[in-house]
Amino acid sequence: MSQSYYLDELSLEQTATRVFAVSDEAIRAFADVSTDHNPVHVDEDFAKASPFRGRIAHGMLLGAYISATLAGDLPGRGAIYVSQSLNFKRAVRPGDEAEVIVTITGIDEKSGHVTLTTLVKVRGKTMLDGTAVVIAPKRPKT
View 1 (cartoon, rainbow, N blue to C red):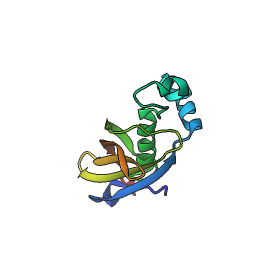
View 2: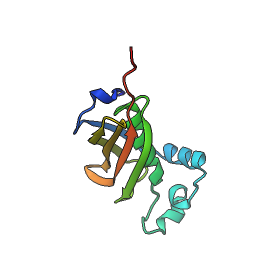
View 3: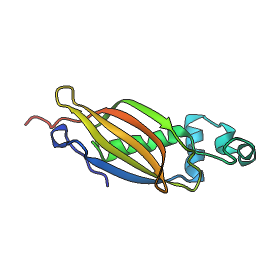
């Protein structure tokens, strides 16, 4: 999609969606970048004995997908993260397609703060939900 909006172009209920392939390569790269090599993410034998009965994606990898959607689509380029809550509902696994949906629920014109609900779904089921607050870019004065 890759769209960007200034604060004055945003509206309540405006939504953006992106789909990310949660590949083994993405999970291993995230483990390397974050230095989070928890075996539930990177060791199938260990993960099979866990309550998940197999490897799962890092929760923060899903958070990164939300960040990419906010920075790439809504509000887009120049958005600044202020806060994010994440409520993990179900495990996302290698091979899943994670659908990220962000929807504007509040706009504070004075501060430039935009509040959005954030969802990650796999096959229509909510895997993660939360709320993000970002500062949307203001239109440059001419």
